[in-house]
Image (cartoon, rainbow, N blue to C red; front, side, top):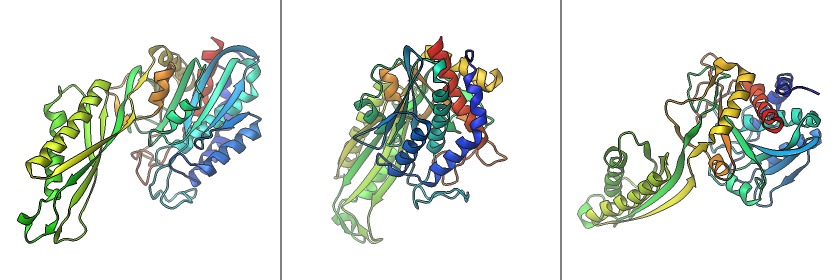
Length: 398
């Protein structure tokens, strides 16, 4: 029998296999909750390994099981599988075959790394006490996939849950292979708002005969900037961003309405609720000043990602074994203001969310996420698999 913290070393031998899986998944990106090709690929890989699984009845998610030789605790690992509606511009020979859809956030790598870990854990399951659940999740980008998994009961009875993000989210200057294991809050909540500004359309030569919703929308955008600048302490992280403005169809026509869409990012739930309320109030009041009206809707996304301190320490020990102590960072200068629906899992079960850097200026993999040229340093793929395996070894056999 292998000793504690030994199984993870076998992942390095699977580097080429993990890489091939990542590239195969990269070619067939799918967005949202319906990922038929991706789910079929994962199912085939699990069947080849002899790992039993079930398919979600509400989306394309899958849950796989690996049972150790002896009874014990249950640990869950999650990989998100969905892609983004982006036209790929990497020029890679394994680039997306689906025009207008791309793995620009590393979820193809997440899935491949978990499949790599699954191969080792399945092969050496007689050395484990307890069980491992592998959650292959849809729709992280829209914060719907984790809720579907929880609705299906896929975390029921689990004692711990872990996830990982590859790429440059935390620090694009951190060398590839660096592992971040923060304690406490490490990512923000993310919510969407939609504001419909209503005016009265008229000819562009006679603006006095209408109510200009474009002018109102412009004032709303500027007014919203004051929320974090003037309504919160300078040490309270708040982001309010307008990312979409739609209105008008002709250069000489003042339209009836304009649609604004944006996002709110916060680290505290009370702040999150207050910001959402103020967005609605400011939009309505600003529109009224100019004789128009504004209707606001909040689409609540995921809460902040808060790692359990004890689980983060366990993951730190695993990371140091895999990457070396000098490559493991446990404190962040500030939490990342990006969001992750893994937060929903952490509200139900103790766990931690980790970050694996794949940044390399030489290899041009230091590009931001959600960019058409986003790429990863594939040489670190096996380390992601190894980290999952090392965490499982530590948690189940401690």
